[in-house]
Length: 93
Image 1 (spheres, helix red, strand yellow):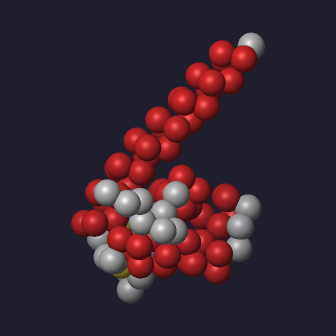
Image 2 (image 1 turned 90 degrees about the vertical axis):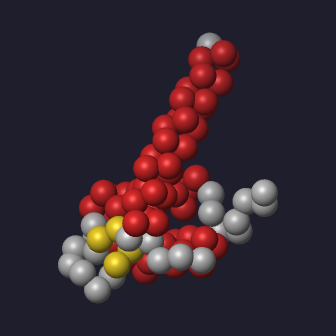
């Protein structure tokens, strides 16, 4: 299976922070980004996966069922990546 273009750990991190806060502006603030940049990340992920992840009609935005699945899996991937980086750093010490 080919990894969808536009979907990487950084994008997943932006998505999970947006999911946690329910607000792109707040996610942007926490990530040190602009709100339009966060919005672009979310749109690119949705385009890559060909599904809507956030219901933007609601305030705060709510995850769609697909968004809930991605949030759970993305959090696990991010955690695994962080553990891998820590393990590699520890080998060098």
